[in-house]
Length: 139
Image 1 (cartoon, rainbow, N blue to C red):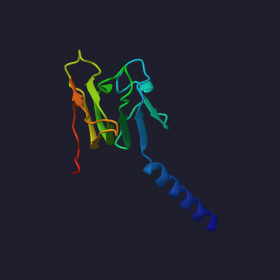
Image 2: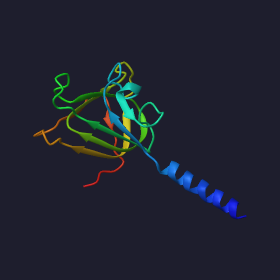
Image 3: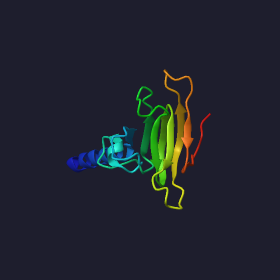
Image 4: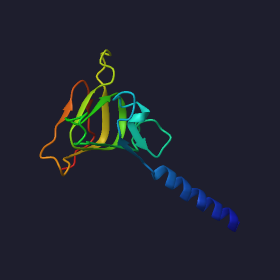
């Protein structure tokens, strides 16, 4: 009986740990394009390709000294119905991963944080051909 109780406790702790883990995602723009759903554009510690669930917390951090992106990263959106907390540091240009499709791509994070980097006086977040619908905004 004692061994059975210990196994259930280990199983319960293991399940709680797995369920409580959220994926951390960082935009690195190393893919063949700038599309949200291109695996090489994201760095993560999971087996998934790109952030697409309510437990995924994407981070897009501008590289202000990169001459290829003087106005911030270019990120082409797709439809993502649920995301966790999304954080943007610096300037970003959002576009449409499939501009020939009549559907306007929408991502829906639980919350959205936009911050300037220390080296920046101001930032610009442009959304051209997509939209971001935020579940809640904290002030």
